Each structure stands twice: as structure tokens, then as C-alpha cells.
Amino acid sequence: MEIIRPLKFGTLSLTDRESRLVCRSILVDMLGESTIATEEGDLAGVTGLFWRYVSLSLATVYFPKTPLRMAANGIRDAGIVIMRAMDGPLIVHHRRKKVEAARGDVLFLPADASCEFTLPEGGRFDCAHLPAYAVASVRALLRPLMMQPLAAECLPLQLLTNYAGYLLRQEYQSEEHAGMMVAHFYDLLPVLAQHVGNRAPRETPQNRMASIKKLIEQNLANGSFSITDVAGAEGITPRAIQKFFSREGTTFSRYLLGRRLALAKGLILAEGSSCSISQIAYNVGFNDLSYFNRTFRSRYGVRPSDLRRLASAAA
Image 1 (cartoon, helix red, strand yellow):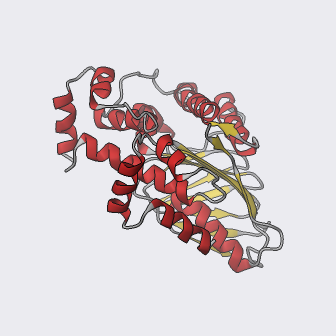
Image 2 (spheres, rainbow, N blue to C red):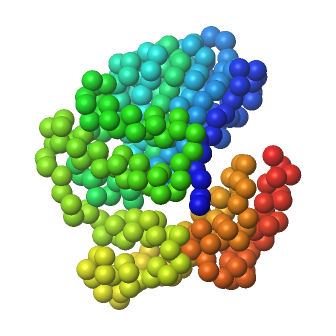
């Protein structure tokens, strides 16, 4: 059974340079390439927690309690970033707009946009990344929440942050348990939107392709998953699905294979992973180990076992 553990990073003995490298490695997939500037002192001694699942990433970073400013380029995924500062206000400059959230208040931001964040008091910074496919069905509901400070006292928001805190601090979760908690996390988003005055939630996804990709992500471990399963779930024909992928210059099978290989690569590179290559292949939906090795080498130019050895040597 796959076990998902939060990563505890940093120590009080880290130098400024080491702390910056740790922060970059943790935040780059959530905020994009980032630079951090401090008005006083440096970043020595950064610590924190990081938790990652296929459809949700969470991080808590404990910066020194000194004023600091972060500039982030954003990432290609058009998802959503949720953030808050817990030891003082959070000031965000996005394009020509400036927003200030009080201590503990939450901001929803577009993940693909460059922004500048200021923490006048430094200290604890919480961040979550919700990929585009995972929020496709509620994106219209969440749009009015973007760049609007949400009060920490909001009950649905408290539930949302409590789920995130649980995932970050629980010593480990099984794949099934983690998936259930993440599902509950996403179920709270339309509740939050409705609570702050938006229209009632709608069940129909706003984008059919996003819905199809979400279904694929949820079934990567299912080796028998096929285009027929997608067609049945979406109520359309396999031919219609192939047309959607054709518009993106690929096919259903090629896209599914690419996502499985990408997930396998991440698992192979995961620090401290004890899963064998064959178990990883099985966990991402490959029933034939030789086929997995062959397609992995074709995609990445290296065998899975060699990639693991190289990663271990570089650690």
C-alpha cells in the first residue's frame, strides 16, 4: 500500500544560502521561480513542512521574523494558489492591484501570474497549490473570491485550513486516506464560495477537456482504465474524446501514457522512497514491467533504475 508522508525540511542550523535553496525547491512548483529579499538579517534557520498529492500541494514555511519580500514568476498551470501569513499581514501586488490581508486571512490567487508578496513581520507563511484540472468544475464559483481577502473567522475557510493542517501534520496517510481527505478539501470550495455570497454550486464542469483530464488523473493507477471508461463517465463517445485530444496535438493513449510516466518519474526521484521500480510501475497503472522500462527510457533517455541511482548519488 502506498504511504504518503509530509516532508519536514530545514533546521535552525541552516545557513542563509542553504535556506534559500530549500525555499526555492519547495516553492518552485507552487509559485514558480521565486526570489526572497530581507530588509534585516537573512533567511538562516528556515524550517517547514511540505505535503504533495497528485491534485494538491501544501507547504508551511517558518521564515525568520524579519520583514521580507518575495517575487514569484508564477507557473504554467492555470490553477489556484491559496496563501496566508500567520505572524502578521500579507501584502500582494498583482499587476496594478495591491491587496492586503490581515494576519490569518486568506487570499486566492491565479497560479500562472507573476506576483510580489510582502510579509512585514516575516514568520509563518502557508501556501497551497490547486492544479487547474482539479478546480475546473468550481472555477466560475471561485472567480469572485480571487484577490479578495477572506476573513480567518469564516467557518468554511476554517474547515478548509484545518484539512490542510491535518494533511501537513499527520505522520503518514495511506493512498486511500489521503485521497479521501483531498476530496473533502475540494468539496468545501463550493461551500466556501456560497458562504461568501456567490451563486449556488453547479455540478456540470465548465470545461469538458478539464473534466476528462481530471478523470484520467484519478485513474492513473488503474491499469485497465481506458477511453471507454471516460466515455461512459462523460456520456459522450470515444470518437468525441479523441477529437478533444486531437485539438491539442495528441491522442488519448499518448496523453495517458505521458501522465503515467511523469508520475512514475516523480516517485522514482522522491527523496526517501523505498518502493521498488516494479512496484512504482504497478502503482501508476503499468501491468508489464518491460513495457514500462522501454517507454520510460524512450521518454526520458534513461532507464528507471539508472535514474534512481543518479538521483541517489546526487543527494
